[in-house]
Length: 282
Image (tube, rainbow, N blue to C red; front, side, top):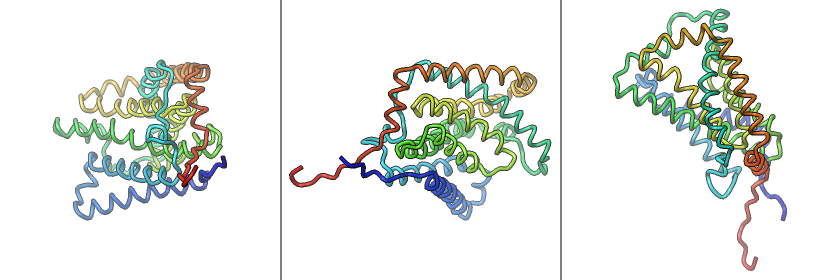
């Protein structure tokens, strides 16, 4: 049976990721034209960006189908059970070195003083607004971004016989560049590389999704509760935390590389999905 699935190249991946960014900017522009306060509302900003990524994901998977159902298409496959708690630990411990990278960038490119740290903004909200922020920033946004970058984009590249490392790098670059803040490119690129490693080694979207949620949860939850000492402690022990992160990543990789379940998932995601049109007598 001939393979009639369309080929998804790195160049096409770049175009789709640029399209997602354009869609997000367009939606934000339309929303801000109706209500200028939208640009200062993190719940609205997060929700609109999530809608953009989910919308483009549906269009991409319609053009480059990845399986008979959505779970198969985005790579929500089986994984070794130990990978999930390790992913949580990875997401939490990645926060301190990412903050150190941000501090280093800000020393090179000092901020102009016009913006406020995310924690201060979170503390200024009511309890109900803070809960909405958790749902959006810790739940919806990571889900939408993972479904698009390490689900639809990564999966389409793998089904077109591109290697897992290449698919991980391309999706990580797109993820980084879609966060259009020069001062955050290095720390976001750092965590994007980690998420890509989890996705490629496990053969499943779940570990990178859980790590992404855990990573986002650290600053949101600590800011909501006023735990300023947590951030200070993390900066003071960033080297030790980074070593712990490296060790956890190594354990995750070793388990994934030796897991029969993960090996099967990696094999399944590399198979082209062939759509077969029904014909009269066949």
